Length: 140
Image (cartoon, rainbow, N blue to C red; front, side, top):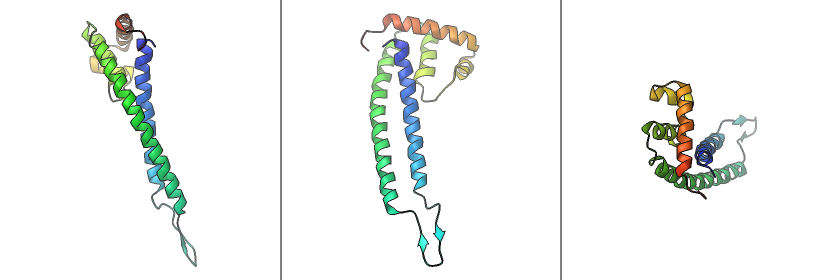
């Protein structure tokens, strides 16, 4: 895997975690008593088996999140180690902001944070990835 592919995998794993967290929130909201219907004879709510099914789904999503987090932390530590070896601080900053920050930051936001044009950010990013690839070990 190239250095850039590795960094892109970190971003996509973070996105997968966010999507799983959003799914958990949606499932949790589905458990709220949103639709109580009144009948002339009795009150009906959602069946109990739906609650256990949703709880099982939430448990599965939480398990996946834990797995992704463990992989993500390992990948991030490796990436930080090699990014720290880059000589230029701009290269380190761009790669860290875009690939390793907790936010889903855009190139435009990176440019704003660094007070540079987007075009310059793209150039620096390409240079940074090429420099990183030079020191990137095979098999990582």
